[in-house]
Length: 107
Length: 117
Image 1 (spheres, each protein chain N blue to C red):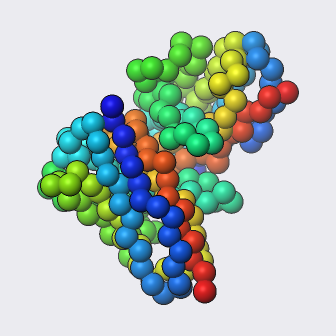
Image 2: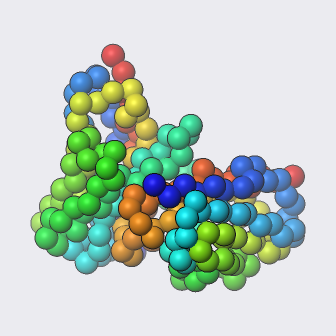
């Protein structure tokens, strides 16, 4: 199975700051990577697919980059609604696998 | 508006089975794959498999091959997942999610399954 190593596990930041989350695959997954946001009481939200394509409705302060094995989710100018847990997911091969998650907390 | 409404929490004895439902609204389930994902805090998210409700084709992660059975009822626009021979390892939150086709644009709210004697 493709192992997805996500880092950091926890990240504390303040509104207005920019943060980056890394996701590394144990083998090349081309650009078959998605990012999701998890918030309590809400359904998980697809932010980015194909490594860097913003899903409709995703604010432009979110961006994704990378291909092959190394990927990054960047959030510029954090807003209060961005404090959540973020997961990456590879869909290049079965079984699809997820990173362990990054909890973005308010500093 | 697309919504996936999952059934309520379940408590089951070890060795029993449970069938979870995921009722879609705002679209026809025959137009998209439906995936199921398992979440345990200490194990993260695990993809279980998908079903194509149009023809019933399924694909499972190998570790869930004998654990989960995915079905769909197009007349009620509902997908189902049955989990059999339950153990404590099956205690988790289970999500259904619409596939595009292999990443997920809409998720259900999740259903907690607790396996305990």
